[in-house]
Image (cartoon, rainbow, N blue to C red; front, side, top):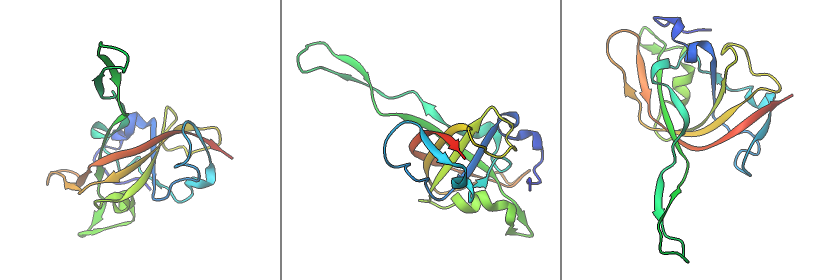
Length: 176
């Protein structure tokens, strides 16, 4: 059920980015590297977050790696080497509150709106966002940790910024 937000056209990437949130990692996520084949059933308890995420501030993607000047053992010349992977991550969630009480549409915030929550953000691009995941879909799964939510402005829609830090990311392919 879509949220009653001021402008439904604010869906992510004009409706072409789907984001689902789960609180459990798919089998095999923490072992190995590279593409992970994930059965469609792994998304059965995921929360569709596309209508809850505010488009203009949402970021969940790789960023340029840090670089370090290093000197190889057998050289006197410093070399600029890429370091660990970096990610940009930010989420502003529309809250769904009726008479001061969060309701069923507030599920995305309820799942990640506390400091220290580790969650898994499933991201697929280019297909219509409201179309469910299907076999052969490709995307990414990000393991993130939430920080304290920051209340939004007190005008317009009720929102909360949830600072998130990417712990790990893997490309995925959905299998039947």
